[in-house]
Image (cartoon, rainbow over all chains, first blue to last red; front, side, top):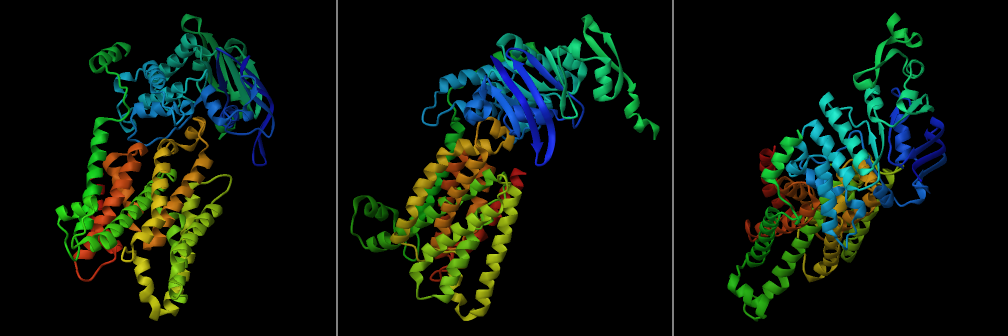
Length: 268
Length: 343
């Protein structure tokens, strides 16, 4: 069974069509990364796949069921989403934030606290936050804050994790820490991951499959080595790049300049 | 990194099973004692002071002593109405500040005071013989204004900026109506003054019977909703991806806040201060967690109103000030102190 599936969806904001003719299948247990230039529609696609934007046509299926025929609370049990700029009151402690992740599982008449506590402690442990769980959000560094939000998403104990640019506001060390964490959750706990990244090299290193979005359409989908090519970088991102085998044979992209067609900026 | 974490874990390693911290319970106990003390003082002190011992024997043993009449017919119902009004307005403010994510939100912002004021002052000035219409009329006016504000700000869901702007517009319009009435019938302004400032002068058992159900049910609903209110403090898309129906909950909670505030202002008039400052003061003292904030706001609201009313009755006795004036005069400096200290 597919974790998530889009069947010929069209996405619009008002009268403006953002994406058209998108069909996509997310298999269980893999890491997928959406790549694409700014304004290509990748955030819109993630919004649609996470039930935050209803397609004007086509179907989205979560574990084989139409996502719009599932109650929002039940969607939250099966799919967690780490937003790009999450916000919470600064005086909330990490622990309290992570407890929010249990909301979809809670019934207000029966607080099965023991099961909840287990899940909360697991999420804190996975994100290395156990020892600082009482710290307030306003006192956290960017990396710690991002881990706290990831812990909240993990506390939902869903099998599918969606991440909207989880590394954008982090320094290189915390970017890698975040991605290593995501990879470990995938390998050790079988989480299916779908994320948006900007760094093509990181996408190549940490993904099983790459989804390239360009001008409101899917440009290509497949393993990193098949999808990340000179011609794709040229067509989609407008850059000339050299592909190398880097450390331990890792596929590495080295941009060398802008491709001809977007060279207008250079002429000025 | 990992090694460091593990060391820290061993040092400070503990498991928490209980979600209420002892410090939280202690703080709530202090709020409770404040409310209870204010209520007792409010009943005991006045033009005639009743000794605490006599008060106890009247209340708990039903002793028919000298002050039985004053206590049972005047002081006690008045203090209880004050407490209920304080609870309702403070809860309404706490709820609205949460769902708008705005510490300056209060019942006035959704038009409750403007609606109640417009209808009440129309009745008081144009139909002074029909006083019995005052409470139901003000209540209906308050609810209609709140519904109007909500409807005006609806556009594929609710945005808090639009609510605030619509609230300002509706309040200005109704305020213009009220000012017009006051100018045209300047000889009858006195009758309306008490309602505009807000006071407990006419409050007794009948008023308590009207407001008590709102207070009890409202408090229960607010306590049940505290978890949802906490989620609504997250950004909307976060709350939504946790499975919360953000628009639906916001609508229901706004309705609850409107009912609470409307029931209070229709009985005692346009008390402005409690709904804004009490929940905010509670927030400065105990933080944003609604599991704490709801009971703390209710207790603080009850205490502040009964205490202020006691001061209003006694400080210039036998002249009685409207409680609204005392509350603003005493509460505002205290609030500024909290603000300064909390940074």
